[in-house]
Image 1 (cartoon, rainbow, N blue to C red):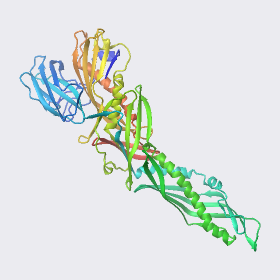
Image 2: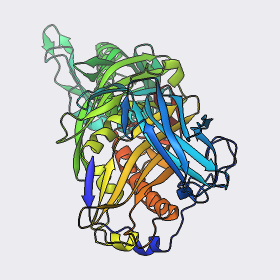
Image 3: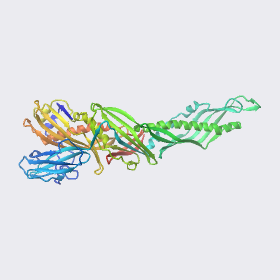
Image 4: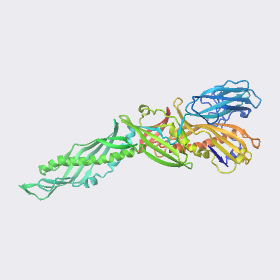
Length: 589
């Protein structure tokens, strides 16, 4: 994708030749700023070479920049020459020494893996100068952006994660006015108007508190609600037979019923239906512990009525009240896992997200919910993204003591490829308005063309334990009013990913330390001030920093599920075979 601009590049800052930290090679043969070496600067500052990189010319004939491949290896071929008069002392490609022919040519095979492989060719001479060539190769199958990411998100909910649900039920139950609820059903029992009949009216329902326990079980979530020290008071209006068919007039008496505890239990059984999750209750039961009544002095049929029908009726009202609460609260608790489609506006683009549950299991350890995901940008029909489907982590691998989520790298790849296709990432890299390019470059510069040859690609490397976003081959060309290219350079970067707790208690991915490679490709004699490695390093760091800010916004828009009423603290990440496991400690509000 290409974008043209008249833009300011912080001319005053760059005119000073300020360097953002040029990395030094430690001489271990692994290149500049290699992870295992002792380079002078491993701080993540832009890597532009050492000494005078312009004293060495690296010309690669293979692979081309922005190469797409389905091969397992690539031939890296080219020629190194000295432009400063010193003898070329060696060439490495991603840390592997290449054999140099007498004319400076070299060739070697480099293994490739799915994703973007950054090929870093480092040439050095006897004077201690080093030059680099960095370019990317994108390997893997490309699919239409409209293709959902199967099993893009996987969530594991432990027993501890269920605490939020128990809190929700407890809060609602303790806040329920059982007196008003039962009074609305008066008379709660009505046996008619003849002899030996009664009507029972409840005046109040009191208790000392309600506790809730939820526990994962095979097939769902076991719920046990305990209403402590239940006291029900009211009046009974009754008629008794006095002689044959003759009944007394209506008599009235007070009553009270007590129970040490009312126990309501059920199993929440979430089920997949029509691409969504439905919640039902099974095995609903209610009992009263330590039940007692006070109907002293009333006829025997009244006592029998209270120990049977009235007791059962009040128990049923409590059971039904709790039973009505639980499914809707369970739906709210699992709301982030229900099928949903929504749009967000970022970078001037409309991004449409979709999630749909595709599999679900429950056992004594907890629940596992699998979601298919999609992320598309309006107006980019036909755009492609790198698809590298891998088996999702097993229930055992993803299990935790709280909430753990597995995010597939394809979720990120689909999102970033879609936004890349729109050109919005290039707009972001150097977005400042103005016409100060000439001041920055020291020549008559009218515009700059930015070409991001490859979409950013996520890679979750289990063996290295790293999660990163790779930016390959961002080509920047400055042109004069006549259209002449008067300067060009290329930037690549590997940006580490981290995780944080967002304000709503969920976790979100963010960018962390970048590793930046910048290389001058050409500059015209019409430039009044030389385009130095230090100046290119500063431009590169500025651009990647601003890109990281936008990447954070994009990563934050990914619908990573959370749990209602819960916050994930001390979040952690761990790569696992194409997935990033995100977890943390559950705390409830």
